[in-house]
Amino acid sequence: MPNSILKVENLKKSFQIAGGLFQKKQYVNAVIDVSFEIEEGTTFSLVGESGCGKSTTGRLITRLIAPTNGSIIVDGKEVATAKQSELKHLRQTVQMIFQDPYASLNPRMKVKELIGEPLEIHTKLSKAEREKLVLEMLEVVGLNAEHADRYAHEFSGGQRQRLGIARALITKPKLIIADEPVSALDVSIQSQILNLLKQLQQEYKISYLFISHDLSVVEHISHYIGVMYLGSIVEIGRKETIFNEPKHPYTKALIASVPIADPTLRKKKIVLTGDIPNPKNPPSGCTFHTRCPFASDICKQAIPEMKKINEEQSVACHFVN
Amino acid sequence: MTSPTTMQNSQVQNTQKKYSPLKEFWKSFKKQKAALVASIFIVLLIVVAFIGPYIAPYDPFEPNYDALLEGPSASHLAGTDEYGRDIFSRLIVGAKISLMVSFSAVFLGLILGTILGLISGYFGGWIDKIIMRSCDVLFSFPDLLLAIAIVALLGPGINNVIIAVMIFSVPSFARLVRGATLNAKENVYVEAAQSMGASHVRVLWKHIFPETISELIIFVTMRIGTAILAASGLSFLGLGASPEMPEWGVMLSSGRDYLGTSSHVVIMPGIAIFLTVLAFNLIGDGLRDVLDPKIKNN
Image (tube, rainbow over all chains, first blue to last red; front, side, top):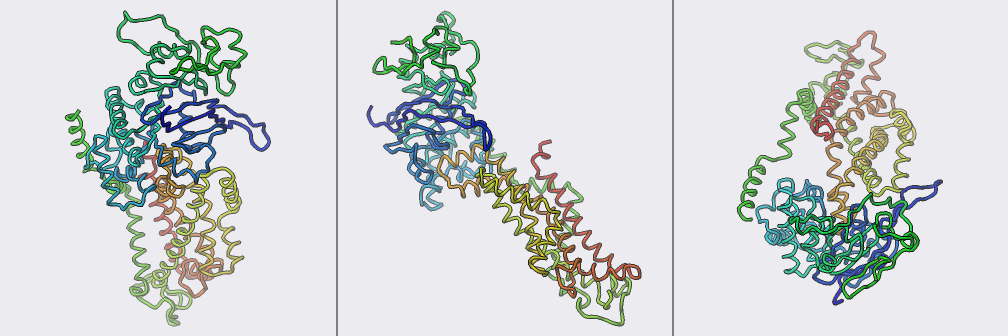
């Protein structure tokens, strides 16, 4: 791959859920084994049901939490094992956009303070210089200069998400991790924000790690897609191949669940039954076998390996060759 | 897309003109009549404390052996004490001592307790355990008993009373701020600040501390009342201000021998203490009704 901005290998995170001084310690594996790579200027989407570990993966990459195992290489530098004090490079290269535009902006700060905060942290610019950049950035995200003296609660959801994007963009990051950035917005506003993100990507050559459960959103914005189930990536590939020729039964079921407006186009669907198993006590073998319509004995015993089936697609399933 | 945006802009402008946190506060605080009256009383008291020596009708230290233990009259509004000193003048000058002791003790307790509470709530883990268990140890003593023990250790005197009252204020502040910090820490914007590389100090100061302020304001006013009581109590026991000082607790203490014959010697400083503590508590109650988010939402 040309110039990868982010390379994640065998990332693992387990959280302690019980235990202490005198009790047996219990762990839950939120992220079991995740590997992927993002090229400069492209969008990689992580999709999956809630609780599959996609948000945790995002938080691991920004080092809001420390990984248990594995390697995260951001712009050529290993950050998985770095100490918090050594992460200055990461904090400038990677920024985050959050799901809830209401909660992610401090209600006590004015817009110019909110958006100028990353500059205050990372640069030695004077207050006037920072404000100038903030005003420019407001224009870039489709707001205007007169908004700078207001508080976040005076804006609508879509406008707030624009503020969140402006804040993420102002340090000129190379990678933006967008954790469900449009799922709290109205559908009509969603497309505005997605188009803004796409437009900014072209202008500034930013890469996105886009975390979402909404496949129609993912289809709109991604170049590559990784499908996660219970802490592992089960299928990974170019957007077109994932949508047109999904190989893993879970991917097939997810894509079949996207509503299609034309009833004559309705195909035979895989409909998943049951809930996601409890990650505290994951199923043996292939973690998907409890819900997979094609499961057989081998699925209960052996964990399927990630197999590269062509240049553009890898799948972890025993029945795909 | 342009027309809806401009429409929203004009709406935003309209709401912005109306919004001012201070005005909002004043609007609801005005309705708290008792607290309003109490605040006026406290403001007057603070003014009196500053200009006391200049407006006092008599010298508060000058004995007058022609007017011993006189009851309240036109020339001595609150009567005179066992040395013939004008009690009203002594109360006015004493206001400064009482307020100074309680304000500085609570202020110092506030700073120390807030820092400990922020650290404890934000970092959690063993730091939290050490700070909170130490606070529990201090909590296990009754307030005044703890203060007496501290003054006994440090020796009597106004400064040591301030230290003692401060020390027993610290754990309450620490616990309050820790609770508010645990809440504030869950805000997504705190995580956002961390993800953009803000230092711990910055996150605590800019994003978490402001969330604790409204609870702190309420608690400080309540705590000043308690501090005045404790400081007077210590002085009454002879552990605080020296006997010739016009401190309210000292006046109570030296007057108690004459309780049967000239009760005004005790009643007047008693009323001063009572009114001041009551006023601070009323302000605290009023502020709670206005500022406490749990009550405000109902």
